[in-house]
Length: 520
Image (cartoon, rainbow, N blue to C red; front, side):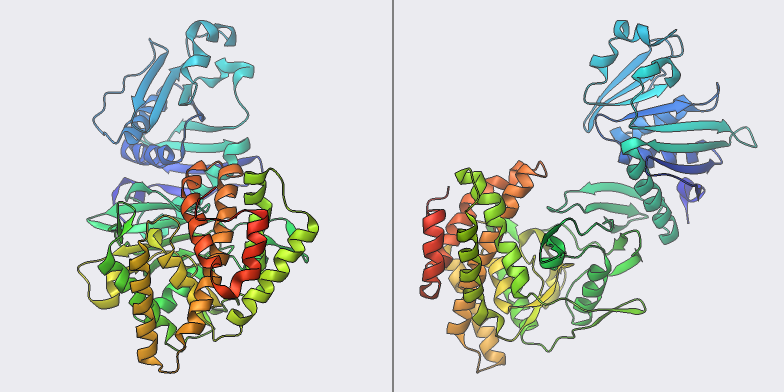
């Protein structure tokens, strides 16, 4: 390993639910700056971090390095606030307030300092935090610096308290993972993630790049039906094992899923191949040639005999079946989230039971057909274009940890009725015909009419699910940006429900939702 971060040795300490610790030996000032850069990535507006230690322990040195790391400018002038007491930095990633409270006699002087206003929506770094008294919040990050065995060395103890405890534990475990992978000294750039709780960073080290995937194991959640949680009913991954298994499985088939460079299944950290950032869309519209390759990949995948067991280390992972209970649990998100959003109330129990029965009848023919690997999130945000490659490897596959054994039509609909993409009707038909031609070429017995019904059924089911998910993301998770896509999803729902075989289901939607081409 190289660089100052490689010289930072870490040790785990006993901790409680409300407190996490991380002890770090800092042999020199460069190691102090490296630790500050690591901590800087974890801070966000509203956080308070205390800096404690005797005079000369390096509190201001650490704070200066942290400010420069957040600014992305190693030469940024960052004077000590010893005389001004407060030093404010208005940075592109938010405001940082660096406070030195040494000359305060007590918390009663904070009002004169303008303390409350200065720290609003800012990251606050506080030297001599004992001056805050009762104003010291219970949720915070504490840093204690002690002199080391030689003049340049220091010992640091980071303590996350209250709500900061799990955040510090995650930061500590992630850095330990990168140290083991040889990437601890890499530069980090945040990547906009998906609708899940996963976090992604692009790492750069010695001209190489990789993606750090931070996906902590998550609780399945509360019981919702039949003694099972929603994650269990909908067959959602709760750790990174499925991602590792499916990535390796797709690569074995010759597709461009990311290579797994390093993994810690227990903690949920993966270091994977960077498949680039070039999209398959431009200005929310599909690039036809790239979508043709995406369709060709599905046709190729759906013609293959596929394993139902995939190795993960010494274990085997068995992808679950996309069964009726999963489809019904997903569909019911419409009743739980979307209908209350647009009508003010959920349907009566009798209407919900009728909804489930209608969907069970509509899904039965689809589920009786041969199954394949259904990647489930096969749409524009999870596909990249690699123009320097050939054939199907030009398409990078990013998100597939929820892969199930399910209907081939599902991923075709996911691609061609993407909730985020304005897909011209003629292009959708052309791409669907291309997929059908690929399937017929490999299997002359392939039945296009049967597929058309499955396509409409999966399209209606997926639109139903997405309407619920988008409202849930807005109301429960504080992500209202997804609501702008609802009109597009409503139009897709209406189009799919127009299939003659879905007439009874369409009548339910008309009665309870008034589905038309005009979005609500």
